Length: 280
Image (cartoon, rainbow, N blue to C red; front, side):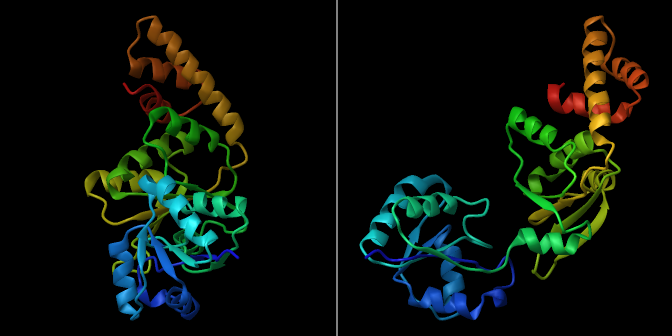
């Protein structure tokens, strides 16, 4: 009979958030699969738990996942943890859950803290309908397609972002969503220097142009107003005009100004979107 895979939620900042049930599960399982064994060892030491640790993360998910599956099939139980938050959410743990499902290995969750719902609850931007979009790709094409697909999204959107990528992300969001769109920037959640700043995308972009971002961010972005689809179509048409005017020899600024006037869209947003998509 196979063992069980336990998905154990771990604290996203404050170690006191590890639940009693999570502590019991970590103490009773046969071994623990961890994103970073050093981080998990600190957590285990805090609660006096001693268990064998194996590494399971993005770059060894295939090889390590097969080994973990073999041990589960042999009857051992495993607790899967990430450095912070819920395993399998924007995390390679989703692969091992799929493997277990395919091989009939029981999987159960020991719920714990989640940066997504914590930020959503604090963001004050509507929680009845939302979508989690994870990290934006660093590939220009994938990033552009992702943002374009969300231009008319009416639900509140939640993103993860690293500090060194925040300025670029805010600039791109301003180009696709508009600088006036509301955003809540949730930084260092549950930690000593937790900050939730509710502002607009334009104001956030201006702040972090002037000062370097610090800490891990969760971005909660207001959904699109009802008229966005028509506006998006107008901007798409304006981009086509910019292409035409540029081919005729006009400067980028002149082409954007002329196209924006003809299509009734923001010149600055059109210019920003052109830079984002064309890389000029």
